[in-house]
Amino acid sequence: MLMRARIYRQSKPAGQSGQAMTHTWVLDYGQNRPRHVDSLMGWTGSTDTPSQLQLQFPDQDSAIAYATAQGIAYDIEIPAPRHRRPKAYADNFRYDRIQNWTH
Image (cartoon, rainbow, N blue to C red; front, side, top):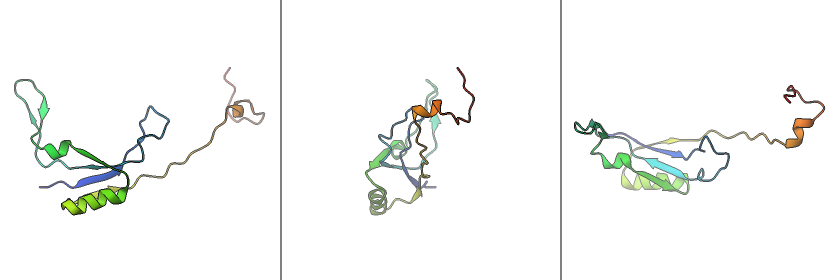
């Protein structure tokens, strides 16, 4: 059974607030062979090299073009739009502040 490739946009790291490295699109191959446990070391391994690869593309269209040119079945994950709420330090001292003052 051949797994389908997944095309998605790189997500923002949870511990970071910046948007660097979130504009690239990634193509992940699916896993086509089962993983096995090495009897000597206990490590999990696989002989399926494509499942260990991640290809990065500058936009969604080029990732789709690559997958269709190579004959790779794919699924596209469209990212949810981000809702930014601008904040200002001065809002901590507003007279109509809703939250309790904690100091």
